Each structure stands twice: as C-alpha cells, then as structure tokens.
Length: 155
Image (cartoon, rainbow, N blue to C red; front, side, top):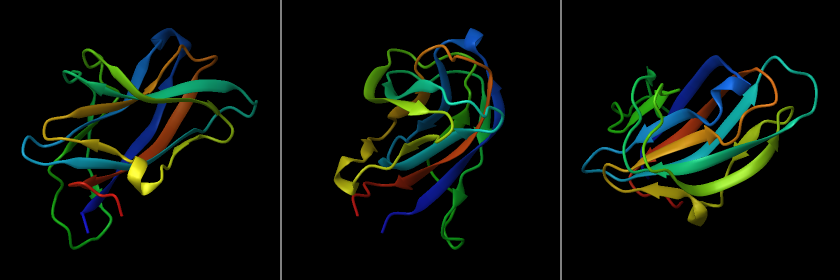
C-alpha cells in the first residue's frame, strides 16, 4: 500500500476581495507519482447557509509564496513525504486546467471523496491546487485537510 499523508490547512481568513484563490497546492516529487485521496474543507465563523464554488486544477507552473505545510504520515512508521504542500500561495500557479468543480454549502463543507478509481493522480512534478473558484459571498475562516498518497493509490 502507498504511504499516505495528511496535509492540515490551518484556520485562515479568505475574503471576497481575494477572488479566485488557491487554498492548497500540492506538487509531486520529480521522480514520484502522488494520488489525491480526499479533501475536506470547511469554515468556522458563519452560521448562515450560502453556496460557494470550489475546483481542483492542474497547474502548468507552481504558484509562489504561501506557507509550507508539514505533511503528517498516517502511519507513524512512515518517513517524510516526497511531495510538497503549500497553503494559500500569494501568486496563483500558471495555466490552470480544471479537473473537478462543484458547488458546496458552507455549513456542510466541501468534501472530495471519490471512488478509488476516480482519484486524481499526479505524475512526477505535477502540481494540483484546490481553489475557491469564484469570489466568496463573505469572509470565511477556512480550515481543513487533504489526504495524499505517494505513488498511484487506487485501493
């Protein structure tokens, strides 16, 4: 089985003025595939139902800036990951290609949990991002986590 890691997204404010904004960007190692297993993103400060749009994209080039995320192995015996995760790049990655898009209710959160054969696979050096796809209706304090596996994980 592939080694799996959790990438925790800390509580961060996102505003309507930000427009399209990557929440997390993941870059596979040059010589290693990676698989996006699942993503869970929610907010902590709004109690009113609102619909927003989230997408998952492949970038041709990485964004810049942001905060590095320390990936946590789900099996404590696993070594450090070979991929890199960054929270909220200050400059978006280049040439995004949308792989998945959907609306989500901010009270329920965004949950990407595909069947195993529908998981998004990254080849070596591929870069994916999970983004707020349209300007938000309000300011949200967003938190969450993403599970990524090293290698191709369709189990």
